[in-house]
Length: 361
Ligand code: NAD
Ligand code: MG
Image (cartoon, rainbow, N blue to C red; front, top):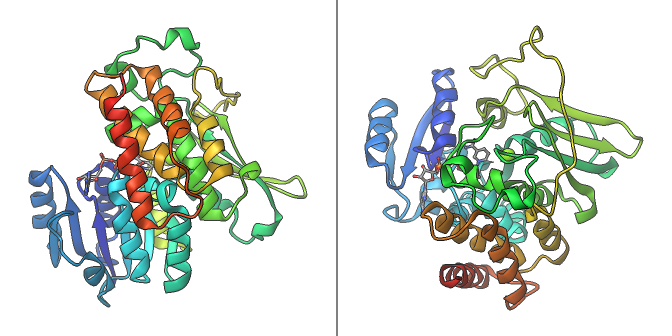
């Protein structure tokens, strides 16, 4: 049996992870569960799974020690936002296999995470569906033969709208994602294309890619989860219905592929798959990602924190939809750039960017 810890077990990815575990009752033992505000759900999960320990992130002392224990084989990080950074670093430091949903930790501190991983011999496996698709499409191939990766994006609820049609969209409309049911923050990120922006940066660190090797395309059906193009012109893709239980299961079982609970493609109803180019005037976030990919340093921490604060303000009604990306851009431009920041400097950049957006009017 594999010993598993799920950080952020009460969220959308956490619940889907437990759903996968339920399908394989003899293969996993839940060692630890953490939540944040939803204590009732955490309590229910504790009763059902009987972990050795549980708690909220801020209650748990010595997370590195807990993760380092020999009974832990696998750590799932399903926390949302840069609040998950310390957990990612702790799990990597402990030298465990880390199944990562928390893309923000790589956006903020990808360089540090990769160095921590190399030092400890930990393994980092993606849960994000696009990165799982890329990971699946590179099995058996050489990374040096990759020409580019193309991340697919559903385009969110506002795909196809012009910039002037986005100025007064409501929170409710933005939360109404056409293909995925997810936490609120990532759902807004999908509507602004900031989710794809963060994923472009995540891909750089997971697969050791250069800025010019990372691209995106709109694909409203969310069935092709990304493409990998090789030097010889061959393109590999991974297809499946939009259901996070599949990429979660792949990370938990890699390299095995047992029959699991995820939805299957229905070949009778499958007709056409559509692709188109994004409108970067209406959805400028991927352009900001390009800048982070090229400049590195503190830019990822600043973009991520500015976005987290801006999404929070959009959700509570004090910022308009188009202002999310504008605020991020302004803060990126104003920030005091450091090219090789340490953890403290990254956290300071994160705090500064949040404050800037909180005061933005
Ligand atoms: P969610 O809001 O549903 O859940 C977030 C989890 O993090 C909850 O368990 C919550 O208790 C915990 N949490 C929140 N703030 C915390 C804090 N300050 N300290 C400790 N724990 C905290 O979010 P989600 O949709 O499950 O997304 C989780 C992560 O997975 C995000 O990074 C997201 O980008 C990524 N992701 C999600 C999906 C999806 O389908 N939901 C797909 C791909 C990637
Ligand atoms: Mg994704």
